[in-house]
Length: 218
Image (cartoon, rainbow, N blue to C red; front, side, top):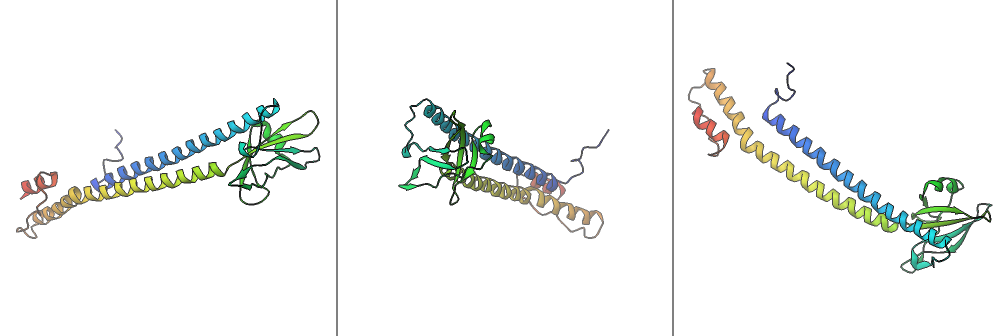
């Protein structure tokens, strides 16, 4: 019968394995939570962008600076002509930089592109028209990035607090239960070897396993 891999481990080693396992699960759960919420936020941006494009194609979107959706005309030569801008706190945001391959890539849905200036990113989609030109719809990702960064900071602080608490609890358990047993073991080995028969087992908090073991050995 194969031997269980944990049977040969000390209590301290088993405690360390358990703590590492819990810490791994905590970090993995935090990563999955951030990834899931980020995907949901990005899906909301895409849905708003697609809804604005559909409404504009139907002739009734009323796109403007307050709509949060950029609209531009991409000529057959590849030049982007701004039709509707997007403002943030009274400042017009730099338009998205539309690469030549975007019309093909956008066939599967919105994609992320950089702005023509600054570090702003846009979520953009290109819709072809019968005239040969294409209409570019884009939504800025500054709000998405702000929310995502706040979420990452919150999850990081929470996860760090949980790991610190777990580490302190493990240290407390080791100090209360494992360390006294190790001292008892060393004292018992001295007595068994006849080195010092006057040695007595150090007392441990009464009511604990270590305390009962020490009382019995003494």
